Amino acid sequence: MPELPEVETVRRGLSPALVGARFARVTLNRPDLRFPFPKNFSRRLEGRTVLELGRRAKYLTAALDSGETLIMHLGMSGRFDVRLPDGVTLSPGDFYLEGALGNAKHDHVVMAMGSGATITYNDVRRFGFMDLVPSATLQASKHFAAMGIEPLSEALDGAAIARLFRHRITPLKAALLDQRLIAGLGNIYVCEALHRAGLHPSLPAGALAKPDGTPTPKAKRLAKEIKAVLTEAVAAGGSTLRDYAQPDGARGAFQHGFRVYDSVGHACTAKGCTGRIARMVQSGRSTFYCEVCQVLPG
Image (cartoon, rainbow, N blue to C red; front, side, top):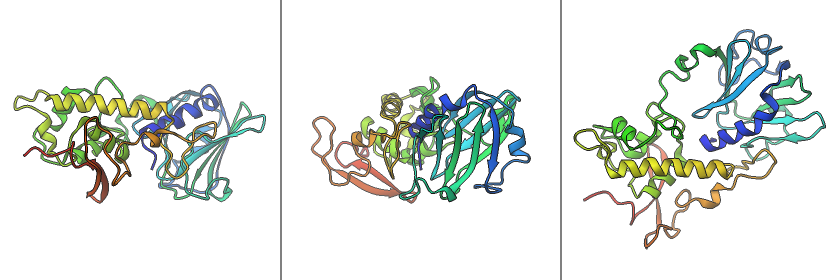
């Protein structure tokens, strides 16, 4: 499933084709994705112009001149193809299943833009979805009302982590993946950030807050590393897992900078560390960490 850096790459790739463009015709090739499309979905889009294309956690948000916002979620295998007027086809932030590229039977939404470009949403597993909500109440919508803070925003710092995690005995990794606390973090980048911060994934989350609720040095370090790893991943165009690629067709490169993810048995890259990367399962998901420099306090 694409994580925040991959979705941000998709946003940047789609922006030139969407922002300022008008939906001339919207064709639905099925009545639903993960959920049914909103009532009169095509008619509510046709004739409307995209004012801005944003991102909230792992969701894309296209503000329309009608006063509504189009919400798009890629699910596990969703991807967009952009066919430009000159016939060139781009796949902004491709993240698809092996063999799915070019298979038209999975083209579920086709958006013909007034500019002459055509944007096609392809989704093999159909875990993605689209919705339309009033822009004025976007953050209070069912999609975002219970969502936590953005990890790349100024809201995330050591104090915020201490406040959110105080008194929590849940493992630190689980707390970081809780979208009600911090929105947009996924398994890959949480593993990477914890390693950079030198924190064990099973450390009780509340240990990052002092008794008075102020942040420990660990909380400040973790906030810094979360932002660093996400920023680096966005700059690299995300991570290529299952043929994820950038808008120009080049694959995201951040997987070449993985320090722990999917690296069992590899030597730890932390300065001065002699450990090796191990794997354990937490809540049914693989966690990668160093057994030497990410140890639980005794």
